[in-house]
Length: 193
Image (cartoon, rainbow, N blue to C red; front, side):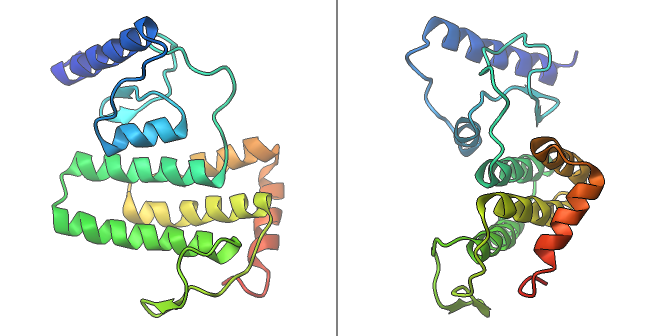
């Protein structure tokens, strides 16, 4: 075990002990990554610079049910992956800002295109934000999952979209053929490219 792994282990043990001794008093949130983990609903447990889901149960008092599978949780998980990746390769602030701009607007376009909520109106950056093709909740989840599966490898070269698609299959209890059929149904609508 090198010093980084030992440091991560000690940090995780300290967080666990704090929660065990003070269950009513959550610790202060120190950075955006901690805020993301709290929004996703879990404690951050790191190994080799990556978030893990505490496979041994050594450090957590995790909730009993499976993690939420919503379009918002998928977006937050993808954002966490993007932030972690950029931090691990030490990109400069200008390049990071440009990447985040592209990523956020790609996701914003995908979300606003399929929901009735209007966050941005009019034409901005040569895109008509008022265009709307509302999908149901499950169809929107499928749409967002496949958008993330498509764009994430462009931003994080090591990103494995097959895991994201496997989560979708597990959530809906689909086979690969059923998943392909559902994606074809949604993307074949005349208003999706």
